[in-house]
Figure 1 (cartoon, chains in turn green, orange):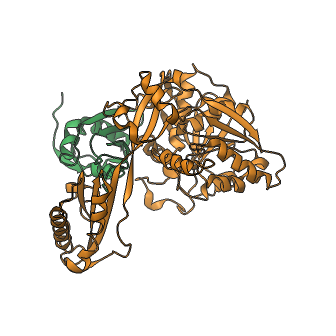
Figure 2 (cartoon, rainbow over the protein chains, first blue to last red; figure 1 turned 45 degrees about the vertical axis):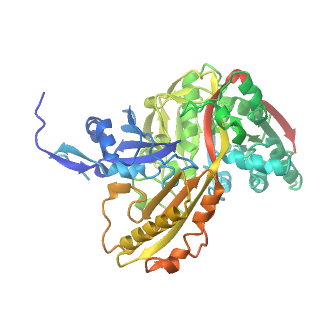
Figure 3 (cartoon, rainbow over the protein chains, first blue to last red; figure 1 turned 60 degrees about the horizontal axis):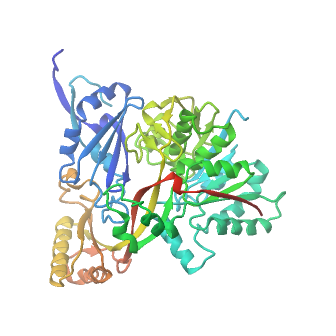
Length: 117
Length: 455
């Protein structure tokens, strides 16, 4: 196994795009690699643990992750994210439409030499 | 059998662009137009309308829209499929027939009516025969909220739509049918797909998911390249060019705005997605991890490789029930110290609510411009921020405390922190909360009915 080498932190915003939606009180965030080469990095670094830590205090339930290598995307389910969801919620983002960009704020370690747009 | 069938979306939700359906029919070749009118709790609104007037209970604006579209539809051989029928598809179809008769069309259009989804009147019978209609999220039995139920509809799939088309319907008006069923139906009809053709049914399901939100796959709400999209005042709504083998192309009419790219289609594919390997519909289960996308020229994305499995033996049921009431009040505070002023106003308001002894299930404060979208992830605002909107919402089972809350916002204008504005809208509206209860029912209990009438 090769050594990791020098790394730096980069915001997901520069590595992926995303869209989010709702299913009841759960927000789903689809995270899509901006370049095919970024997908393995996302798989390795955008873990359930990291995402749960990122959203700690903002969501009330667990996080699940699914992989869609065919689309170079990950799908995250953020449970208890929408204040009851649907018509119950008092939130501005009752339908979870900007959880996408909230996830894009998260930083992950990338190889120091990685070219990022 | 045709090699290509073109199915377009004319509407992603009730309240979407008024012109999109007309553009779809007029701006280029099209065989079918699907339109979605039913959000999760729309049926409760329609049940209330029908309770007041037995001839109502459907999306009324669908009728004049059909009046506008029928001449071009008949001339160009375009058929329309929509769930605008709500809880009274027959009445909706009859209203369209009446409009059609006044239009002097080259022939009498045929209207397909799909019902059998409405189980409101059957609920007690179903419950007593051991169908608990348990909430899919919480496991609670429906009995817990039975006396507050306002609507109950099973989600039908593509089969009754296929039946209506086979019987010559030009317009198919349904009650609750899955959005994907509205697109899959014409594909199954044209290509003769049947139960057992799981991969092709899955492909049609994917096509339905891609176009069911209208321009959200043709450049709308897309994070890639949004600043450079052409003419978003006239976005082309999506069109699926479907083929008998299940592969299809996502495109839009030439001359319309927006862009169809792998990025825009991928964003729509992951939208409102649970476990991507098992996208369950009444017609089959699609595996979204088998989809292959390829850009095939400007505004054309090819979709292929879709695999799927057999349908389950249940149907999803959407029940709506009365939950309580809510209201949201807002005030805008300006620089300097906009955030501090807004926070102080919130403290004063909460102190007032406490002294009045008002009980709420929840009181939520957000500061628009600071934390309403990303919470604490946005960090602290710029101290010189130009303005901050204080936004406070309350929810309660009873109306009275929500009503009293709604009267505590305006006094802050004269009584509270300075430099406040943005209150011209008047007292916050009290909204009845109708909540959504998702459940399952055995398919053997649900019997779709298809009628076709001539205008």
